Image (cartoon, rainbow, N blue to C red; front, side, top):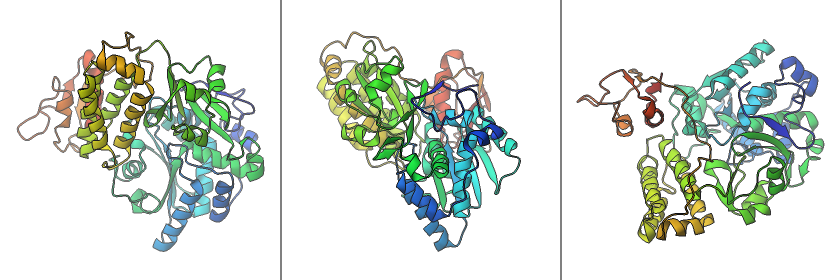
Length: 478
């Protein structure tokens, strides 16, 4: 089975039943977990509040508040809401949701159907970007044979922005997974303009467990302020279920990892901690927040002493810039400009180059249609603070003397032969040719000169960036 290896500390909860099985089919799932109870919307909200269930996709928004917001919006508009599971997980450093969808998909389905029943929802939609997770969910629905209301699986483009809430709702509705902006919450207007309960894969799995156990037994695991277990992805390759409150350093050492030069917590939309700060951290939202970090989507990435920190940061910053939706200036123009300035710092640009980086970070903050430019800026800013000695070596001397070992995970394009244009979607933005001028040329009207364009092997990574850069999603690699 595809996906990262999984492990657990203590008694597994989300991964229960996987001690002796690669995947739980529906029958095995019922043997391990039993059938979930029926609950009203208020009972469900009370349960989520009692166990302090929060979104596990990054923002950590209280799930009880989402439920109540959807209930109010649906009553006010006299409409039935939609329940959406966000299983896109577009960040290469995070694999926990894929582990759930591949290994125990019925737990996720239980949570989504439990919420849908409580809200009298019209339908459940599971949004994914990977072929294997889509296949696993379709197989799980076949195993169930019938569901109490329509459940569909929607495959979206595998790009970082597809996981943003409004982009996911828009992608499900129209096929164009771009952030909407404007500050309208999906609880008010999501899929098809209907009130939408949208949360992360792990959130629904935790909901299904809490509903079966009840609040008090659920709270017996973890710490009092953040009960239950947490799924984390270590070093981009190992998914672990751990009770909250476990010391971060001890968790890493159990899997032959150390704190290194520093630890990135929360993934590429998260922040860096110094090794000294990480040594005092617990796996908990509050502990990491007190240290200036964030648990986010649960990605924890220690940086070994052997690699160049700023070189690694530059690689990720370049990827974040390439993941722009291409529809607002702070993201489409600001992030590449930030990367260019950061590259000058790494090459020894001194105080002048560092001043440009700081100016670029201020320019993108608080001005995007979604949180992507803000988070990318925070990622860079925290790196410059944590790796200050390395920054001095690069800015005012000749670098740190260490090679960039590509430790931080990046997507890999395994094979490609050509770029294909979907003429029904192409809107002649012309952004693709700025990324891949060696392959894509434009006619006088701004449209690509050919519908199929061969890609040399050495340009496959650039081709992937060109596909991601297209705001109309009109390109694909074949």
